[in-house]
Length: 327
Image (tube, rainbow, N blue to C red):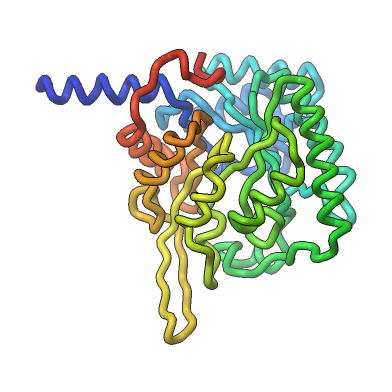
């Protein structure tokens, strides 16, 4: 190996050590042979996490779409912690997926789950719980290749529901702060977090230091309709970011026909320039975890490629600035 190659490998190693780059669980279903994954023996959990380890990750986000840790008994939660430790996987965050706390029928149950998840995250030593206001996919969305090509529910327009969302997230923030956990709110279309301006307003109305934003702008640019400038969205949200689901999309537009087509792609090939956006985020003090997401195909392998790209553009930083999940 040449001296230049050695230096490059050493730099990549330093970056890997100093930034939390985590695998997502998008390709891991919550059912296995018609049995919920949460009910399976812990050895099956270890087997399912093996592709994450083989892809080179040392951290993984646990999603409720795979295992809802807020519904695990203490003994099972301890088993999950043991499996993760054995696999050498740290957990920078827990993602509560499609469990809106303002859903007209399930809102209160989803709020209770969020509270249980905060306690479980603290027990699992995960510093972030990521929440959102999007809920379960509609039947029509589940029948197509890409669910975002079919519009989901519109956000409630009445001010009472908005204030209910603010109150419930403030309640969750108080709980999170009391057990040493932070909340991160995920950007998502047609919710109160559906644009940069809306997300910042919603965060300000909650008004709690334990809450930040997950600037998952990928959720917004994949919409097959006119969208807010991704540069503007990032400019508004990055100062408040504490956790980051990061993914990219190709976007083809024919304005003369009103046609927009989108497709998942790697971080470096999509329309978002993540080199510039990550530099901007770090300049504004971002030190949180990156969770590499990708829909379709071999998700763990694409995630590994995206992690390699991130390591190539992230600046090295000192151990004193390393997040708790990397200590």
